[in-house]
Image (cartoon, rainbow, N blue to C red; front, top):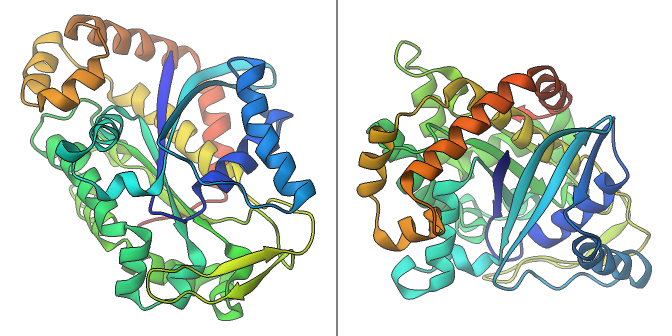
Length: 342
């Protein structure tokens, strides 16, 4: 059983730092939960830039192109699930699929993903005009991708996954003005919902349809996180125009809450998938035939439609066996995350 989690967002939002901090913190385990790379070299590739960040005070280079790695999530040394972690450079989201192979692959990854983790710069959201924050976080582009590959197909009865879990990571929370930290980040949540109003409005509207849409189709939540911790980085230049604010690390980082959005995405998606994975082969064929060949080719990756269907049925059976562990994973994160729709 392998889930697929795609991490994406605009340029400079903190995706690389978030990934490095998450994998470092969970390599040895948090609250009984641990992430293990498929092989030692994969772990080393992530740990080395984190070491340079901690010891050398050097911000890691941004992700270039697309990166996909396989990890396993354990709970008290019991395997919960294997998952593919897909990470993109920020610019991929702003390019049409017919102009870039990387953009076409991103579209396929969104379509095939069980969950998405969207990374957005909380400092930009708080300190820039709402319309500027929308552009700099690529929130409109993000909604466009989710709408085309997850929202509209599901409403039309053509979606492969029957919904998706959405975790919104709000980075650089340590640098926020105090008014945005007050009352448990209430003002930040309000503005974030405004900046990401496309996704928020869709989820809110669909959850009102209680008679026709099961509430677990679109688990969606957000959380402010910090890669460095309060007082350990300072603003060296405020953002203006296309330039984001820049920061200097002044003390060794102490990541805060970085694991909760990931656990929310995995736990809720495992739970959601176990409840919704009821597809017949003929239905799957009809749905896939309506997709663009460019995207479909990347989803199937050499498999037949029947093989893809068989894989999904195996996943469903395994999820039923893991229900207690699934609830343990989801429960840890659900206590911490803030619902995208209040």
